[in-house]
Image (cartoon, rainbow, N blue to C red; front, side):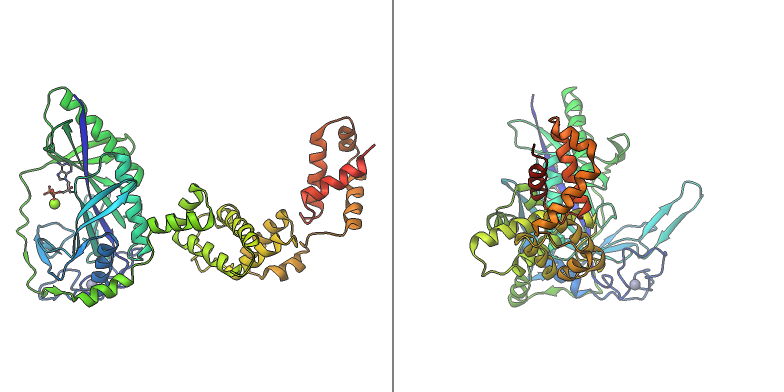
Length: 483
Ligand code: ADP
Ligand code: ZN
Ligand code: MG
């Protein structure tokens, strides 16, 4: 018997609003000191009143528009009642039957994965259980942070596809500037529901929910593990227990956390302290205009426009800011250049951004205030390279200088003496000097060892800080060493 896997995801993302969801406390996920961004409202004191954060609502609606959802014209908040130390009110303000967004989809590869709903709620506080202590600590900085929850239909078929969905969604949230969606930091949390059904049948099997997945890799691995585990159980004629399981990253396996007592009863009821929300069509159309070009569109467009390889497209789309920087540099190169010249410069720009600049950035974003190379200066460097003012090794050291100082390339060129040496007499003088200093290599070359020539070329490049091109060095050395 063959079994078909079915997966549905529940994904939470912290919104990056300035303030919290129902109070004016700072929403700062990077705050290290516990319990500083708190007030009576997010501490759940009796008698306080919540006031919804309009920015958070706009962010969720925008996400819904980006994901092809129907956006509610009428919506409301509800109380989800349960008790836990990280939820001092005894209920979470969430949304039950009238979420902000419904019935969307996101294309992953060739398939549309349907989105059931996206709603808005408040995050809970963070509990800290230390192994050494006989007490737990609660940090309320996170309590009341706006949290978006997205629920997919059970449309995914593998761990790989689920991870791809998560990654695409992460990119979209970042493009929309609604969440940094960093899984390691808990800004995006994925729960996977996994079930199997015999091939040829329609009815879905009993699902298992897997929690604490804090990377896309663990999403993929945990689902693959669950599929194997459930297949073995079914093949042995056993039943799947409906339960919640955790993921043990070290052992690469899921483990039972709790059996699901018949569906939780949260006694949802409309939040009496917040009036229902209504949105006009105009308001929603206005928001639609704020949705930027999304990753899939951008992938198709830049591929065509700049003749990029798949890997280059992937990098420039994944790193939104780097992709935008690349296009700013291209626009600085000047649109009135002859087609062939522009194509050459675009190709150089792409190479220098994808490899050299990436290497210098070493994980830093081009939006970081410490990154100082303006698109104008980058474009100037590319032009100097394209017209032969500098050699390629010269451009690389110039780029490094620009990265370190934020300086202007033509000024740095003079102060660093990196201009390509084009005076043949000067090149010849340097070559003669290298030849006289390296008699062993010269002898090796004359006895037919090609490596020796490579070595001499290297010596010339080093002596001139790369301002002689390798081809130029090769030519002059061969001429001088000819028998
Ligand atoms: P619950 O009431 O247990 O929360 P929901 O119907 O709200 O279940 O679905 C929660 C998530 O589980 C959704 O992402 C949904 O797509 C997924 N899901 C529902 N049934 C199954 C199933 N049989 N197998 C896999 N995923 C499922
Ligand atoms: Zn507060
Ligand atoms: Mg549910």
